[in-house]
Length: 123
Image (cartoon, rainbow, N blue to C red; front, side):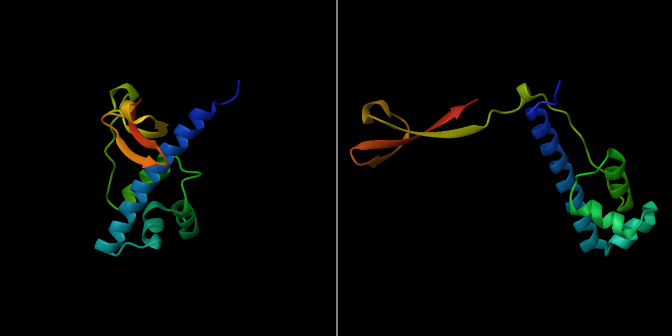
């Protein structure tokens, strides 16, 4: 059985979310407290090139990596799990050409006799 594509996309999205939070925290620590990569490396017992490599992207991060980086700047993350079914439904927009009488309540733009319609679709 192969790893489903949807699972890989989901994992990548979550990895990127964590990466963005950690990097923003490190940038803030640098601005506020003058923290440098060499300070982070020294505090967690790693080399500066290794820390620099981690901060280029989350490709090989583990939970220990996240913990080490946050601990080195005296920070931590708050976590909350959310079921997809409990999330607010996001709107997406689909465009189609329909007769004016069927386009009630939609954003309408006339295009060569037809009407361009943008309709919010949930789900």
